[in-house]
Length: 60
Image (cartoon, rainbow, N blue to C red; front, side, top):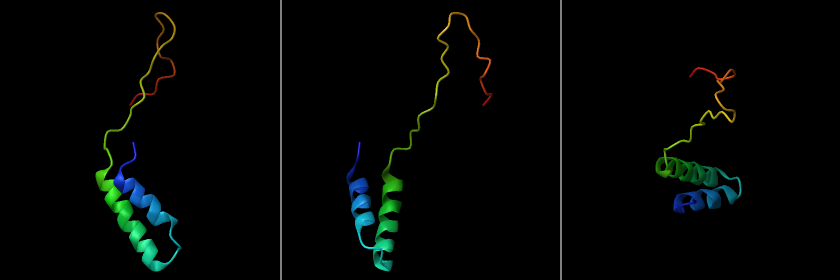
């Protein structure tokens, strides 16, 4: 779900590649990274077979 900071970042990245525009884009990126959700998705191992183990599971 895009928020206002994401929209500002997109607009800043569309500007011409000047030194001032790069600074504005960097600041917009910092603001966006500070406000974005921090919850990350994690994969879940699922066996589709009955009573099967996970022979290819990687220990985490």
